[in-house]
Length: 327
Image 1 (cartoon, rainbow, N blue to C red):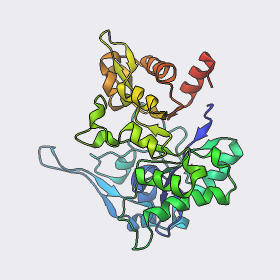
Image 2: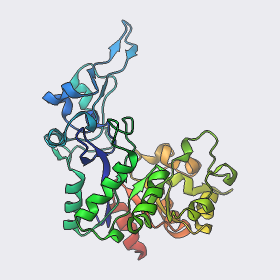
Image 3: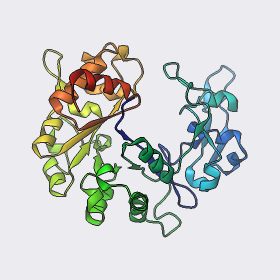
Image 4: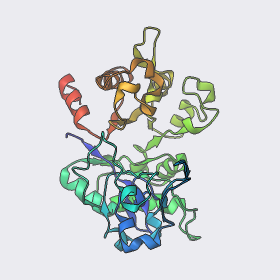
């Protein structure tokens, strides 16, 4: 589809081996673990939903299976599936067969799970750059008393060094600002293009339209050596009085501070007829059809000037880039 940079979300197993997973505790929704003998090792075993006599939900179906519940060898026996569960399910089969109708299971019936090291070799063979995200652990750190956050961050970089990957081809990411600062201080060849994923929207005091609520400020981030910031798409755009999509003050301040910008995630939402949902929240009055995705992409590329954009379906971005003659 034309993607030039591919991501492995990095987490660790019970025996501290790095693997690719969007979350440390998503195996119940992204693999077949609940259908295997490994289900008994899950942090929370599957339990079906319960309803009262009138059909009202009392307790949703649930399970929680983490990479830290199993060894890397056990992890490699699993098969991937589309990320989805049915919280109203009264059986395991119903719980797992929950893919939204705007997604497809065509390519996800028997997915191959990868270790982080395997992802590096795959990406090298494809001739693409790599952007691993060090995922926030779902277990307490230091894990088992001695596996620290710094050791985890270092282990990820060490696997690129062991594979002799040019640091310029690696854009390491984290939502944890301390991870970025660690790489800048201890692995500067990787740290210089490390990506700070900005999730301060979760803070009650944060307002992407009010620089006074940003701590640290864009200038402070730049002073600490951060060169690339990556907020969700909606923080980079706003609408003017005529309902046109325009760069937000967050975007203009980031650029003024000398920060490069990457954003996420295109093609993650469902149909845009309902204003686009979470990823379009700052511009929802201007969103009413799927074509508006390209309008947003055009503003992000031409007016905001993003360095790159994450997409669950990169062909859309490749089509746009080729149409506009961009790189």
